[in-house]
Length: 192
Ligand code: AMP
Image (cartoon, rainbow, N blue to C red; front, side, top):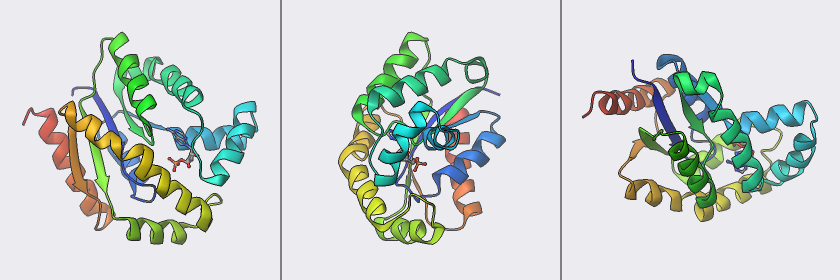
């Protein structure tokens, strides 16, 4: 099977993380979640983790240079070069999208597809309140949604211009959404 290189976009609380994990297992590709990488750094209290914690608790974005460096290092690792990737939570800004494009170009690689997992604001707000993660205070949720609309939503157009954006409805049960994603990806793999 062909190595997949996917980006999944979607508001926080859209179910991206869970779906990306399942997709990475099905397509035997590497799930790269910048949120998970940052949370691991916070957990082990590295220098990065200490800085990131304050930013994450406020619902702000970690600076582009830092996050671009982390992702560039990760996608150059052998497992990712061999098996491809599903990027979850990256890119979130146009500077990140450009860095990713440059990074892939310099390795002679390209993205197969960007998927927007679409879940409306009201629904994601409720889901985030329900999951009660440590950084899910009401202020932080509000802040993250605001940043998504301002910084990340414009990327949808950016990917669309490059002809590789597909919108998938993220409402419904986890299994229903998963099969929608699978159909879209299988369509791309088979060249439809
Ligand atoms: P997530 O698990 O994707 O919801 O990310 C949790 C938090 O990590 C975000 O609210 C940001 O503070 C930070 N973060 C994750 N990915 C990025 C990124 N690509 N750029 C900047 N900050 C990020």
